[in-house]
Length: 196
Image (cartoon, rainbow, N blue to C red):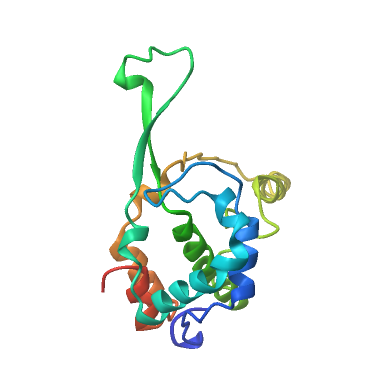
């Protein structure tokens, strides 16, 4: 079910209660972006910050402009393994730390997109990642059931495993935007997601 059969999807304003819930659900961390605000501090002062944060998120959604300051990360080197030589640059991997507020905006948008995709059945039934009530266990059970059915029918079974770590780094932006158009995301929403 895609295209004209699906109602147009528009990102909506976020209610302060939703922002508060997102902030409370953030994992506790002392890591900070360039703004030097960590999740612990954000949670401590959330009653004071949620109204302002909600305003920033809603302005971003309404104007379809992702704040530039939310895109700038602080890069820190992280030792891959304590047994490795700390003087060898190859022993480290770079970690990009974004402002915590950017994670709140991403989560607010994510929740709306997922609700739309689930409501109109736009996710393939074999898609188990990043979905409520879906995980590795549900994926394995589904594969096992299909294998058993194939065996009962005397069919051969093949399996291909693909490592999808850092998969987002490989996303084709043009293809992603074409899919959002196919799923009837509004022009404003597509503009928010990426360049036109």
